[in-house]
Image (tube, rainbow, N blue to C red; front, side):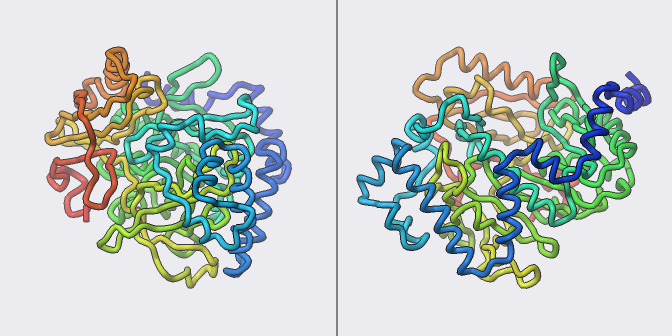
Length: 477
């Protein structure tokens, strides 16, 4: 199908009913949209975040203590793991005097959660209300996490509040790069779909090639978005392509929302130059123990105190591991959870926006990184850990020493079998094995995966000299 045919189909992709529904929905005031689509918890937390945004330090600490007491009391009553833990440590959440009192409890790790998953699930919430998500973060340890509709609404409230700092609303015209192929109704593996004020583009590996990059660029140009959203590595792949082809930045872009991965200065520079707008990264995780992003004036990460209690473990060289206690997910609380994410904290507050929020200068260890194909091009190391192929995988890591050849190191779980290997190999073929990509993935079984010097287990152990390849020359610190 030619590029012109693709664009014409994109423009006419919505049925008459869809267009009528969108037009009606677009005419609704924002408060009505919020109430209809996002729910009561979203509305409540949207108001709370706005009211508490400029609280002084004492009022914020009092709010944190109230939220912390409530979730700890719920955990003591309804979560088997914490019921036993609190008893063993003589910890009574009703007697909490300040947020620092939780430091008498031990750290929680992803391995502990994975090995005792059922004991972390609240027994007072019906299973039909659970919303599950599988994550590996940058540590390569697959983990299933349980949420509820309410906790998801709260997460949306935080997200909208953060993005609202640069003018985003649900009415904003937005391009969203979705890393897997799109599924809608009876149709699956769609490369793109447009509905309402959103243009969704699949950024799975086989779509991040020159032919589709051209089509995506033209779709975005005709769509005239105000914002673009996606993983850092995906935004960078598009930015690389635009610079290589000499494509001009899109007109009218207010910001590029880059999420789920660390953004380094060289990446920010390329993304901002290519899109002609500020790159606005955020930091968060499905475990819900930390969330933050920049303000209107600063690129430092302003961490929401209404979301979590943040602590730090010193890792040397001015680096700290982030430890968080989530305040919003009663279905599966995480208390003093070691994220294994490495950052650089600031001991001062933002002197421009006046929010009394903890600051991180940067997030150093939250990137999926890149693989290098046979032609020396960079390929995002993104993989779907929610599939059945990772069910019995204890830990994994991409390892590369030469272009085009990548080893997927696997630490097998207790119930791992040959059928898991078969599923893994099929998953790799689906994601990486096609001529245009030029990547061969080989499964390699290991007993353990060693930590880096900072104490973090990297998702990608990249040994190829990245400075030898296009776009990275003199740009990687």
